[in-house]
Length: 203
Image 1 (cartoon, rainbow, N blue to C red):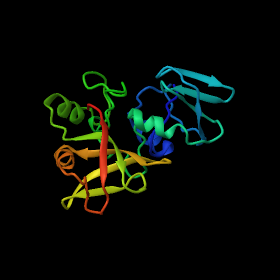
Image 2 (cartoon, helix red, strand yellow):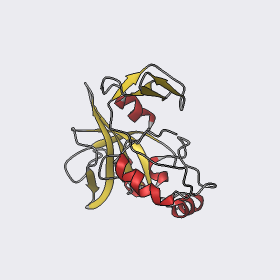
Image 3 (cartoon, helix red, strand yellow):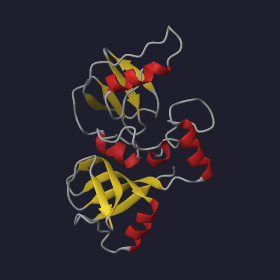
Image 4 (tube, rainbow, N blue to C red):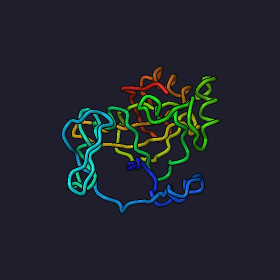
């Protein structure tokens, strides 16, 4: 089985997960980091190989591991709500916050994985109060930036893409702050930055 890590360090993750392996024939290894390139449209979750590279289908496009590096895949991934986690966030966000069930990337009613009990309890009791949104920022920022609203840490930026006409980002925002932003004509946050929510996804 091959997994494309969407954030964090593969070697560290493989080492952390090794303690959950109970069958001697199972071995976790981290491959050498390789460039990502953009390929043609391919059905979501489809997988193929090209020479020594790998192709992951994402619907409107595909991700090619081992291709010549380009960033064309970043904007369609962002607009479709496929999160990429900056280095300071792996392990900090629960599955509902980044809409993993919608992407068929997590199950709350079966399986066993670290943190499942907490994630399932929040899911079934409706207790999770942070969700992912696509936003337009008033200025370029880096993924991993934490923004405040009303003096409260409330907005985590994930991937940020600077386009020709605007700056788009995926952001995990506290639900109560979303209501305030939607009622605030300026959509301002404490750092003097404004943002506008353009899309959101269910947990």
